[in-house]
Image (cartoon, rainbow, N blue to C red):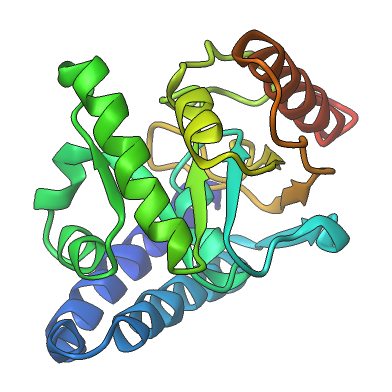
Length: 237
């Protein structure tokens, strides 16, 4: 049954992506808000399919810490759901994402239109400078900059290696950083087509104040995200 539901959800996921790309691509010629609305509708459609077909739902906690204006959000990354779901509970998210994704149909088109922040990881120091510059511009627009400090997906309960990009943005912006704990990989794993019934949880944690030294900030953001994400693991994990 799990395999059948997973297959049906994959059809729902990619079918909705194609449908939105064909029917709502005119939004690419309209305003930022119009394009963002398309992404938000699609994300809601994906979560609806996840619940109806797979029997999985998304829960958001720590709403008293959820930023509603300009902010830096550093999140655990366990799979694609971490990119889809925030469009349904953040007002105007701006993701730091791999440059390669900008060339994909639908995802890349709308990522460019809504000014997501592409990162060329092969450029190293130059990439960090460019990322910080773009983040500063997006912050000035009142957006929530979402970055995955590990830079890649990890399995639930598995600690990642935290990269310096988040510290570069934190230092350059001079703003606090809101960590976000995540448990999504048990529902939507990082690899494969299997989707499982259950509850994916995203939890906003108390913000880390601005002004910490780089080493102290990196230690704090990793400790909070890892502890918070571990606490979200189901009892049997």
